Length: 130
Image (cartoon, rainbow, N blue to C red):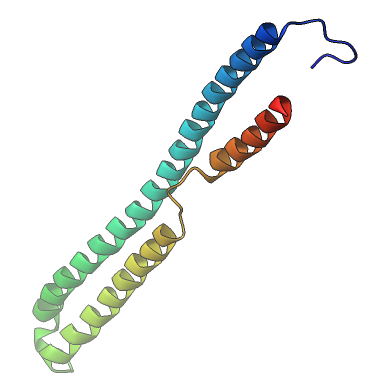
């Protein structure tokens, strides 16, 4: 912005404001893209954790089968040993799934930084016109 007397016409001032507004909008779009990319990365990590939890829960089913075969002639009844292993593996899988879901719920899909800067830009534009 120029200090002191400004000899530019009203048309020139509006033209400059238009250019600056256009540049500002392009920058805001770039900021929104960057912010959404970052949020996408976070969501990807959380989905990966949920997938790991699902895989571990599936391993619980496999452990149930393996336990039935291995413990066939051991100290405790077959059903009890299979039940213990299954409960432990499924509990760990369930905890991983729950942790991933909790983390996903905390991520806001809106580009919050961009929204805030757009509000600031609107205030700036109002001051320029006022």
